[in-house]
Amino acid sequence: MGAYRGGSPVDHYAPLKSGYEFVADEDNFRLTQYYADYLWNGINLKLGRQVINLDNQRFIGSVNWRQMPQTFAAARVDFSPYRGIKATVAYIVSRQGVLKSLSTQPFDYKPFNHSWLVHLSFEPLKGVKTSLYSYNWKMNSDTYGVNIFGNLPYGGLKFGYWGEYAHQIVHNSDSGIWDTANYYHLKLSLNTDWGNLKPFGAIGFEHLGKHFITPLATLHRFNGWADVCLKYTANTDTYGLNDAYVYAGVSHQRFGKFEAAFHRFTAPEDFPQGGNKFGNEVDFLWSKRVFKNTSLLVKYAKYNADSEASQAGVGDKDTTKFWVMLNFKFGVSF
Image 1 (tube, rainbow, N blue to C red):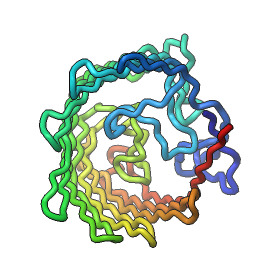
Image 2: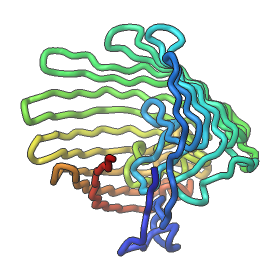
Image 3: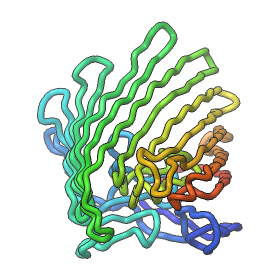
């Protein structure tokens, strides 16, 4: 499988041009996936360059919003050691990031090369799912965690919940940081179905302790679409991050999907010169299938920095981003 990101009519953004807002896309062409896949007696072995998406992609993901996905040269085994339990064990040899500068070669002594991923998922009760995981990011950190999630139907309503906790041992030799940090994420959601009209909404709180990082995550899915916190939570998370958010929307068979979200960002600890407020953000989305194999997506994000964020040097600038995207699906058979 290949991917191409060609020249845009408007390339006024970093990293293509300095002095503009950062958008993690650049002109690029490469083969994104090429692997050998073997299935035997319920054991699936995959060797080669591949996508790895685990849980909600908060820790390991393919970054699909970008024009170029994140993939890994890895050996991966999926199997069921016991009825109802699904296990994934993967050994990452190298990373191919969304930017050329994020990619590594298999024999380089670089972060994430030669890292272990272990993930177990099972359903202890009907409608209740849980995962246990251990991610050893070489030269970076060790992360251990558990989540529990599911949906509880009641009449015509469906109540959803997500609870997750993770502990991380940070050992980033480049930054000289050796520390431990905690993560938790709590979310309650509600969905219903009124024929062609399907309203939905959620309220949640995500906490990343000081120096807790998620460098291999699909980060655009979290902490606002303006991506103000993207590099911060991936690399340093110097002061930590709290994200209190709420979103609501409606999906209609004819008019498409509408969604609006609000985020309030703070730090768990005060900045060196006082204050702990980064800022707030509003996001809007509209998507619609315009033809059988073509869909349109429009997104808007507006981040408003708090004056206290200047003490941290993170999220201290107002940011506005707007996207229009056409997605095409096609297949070739012989």
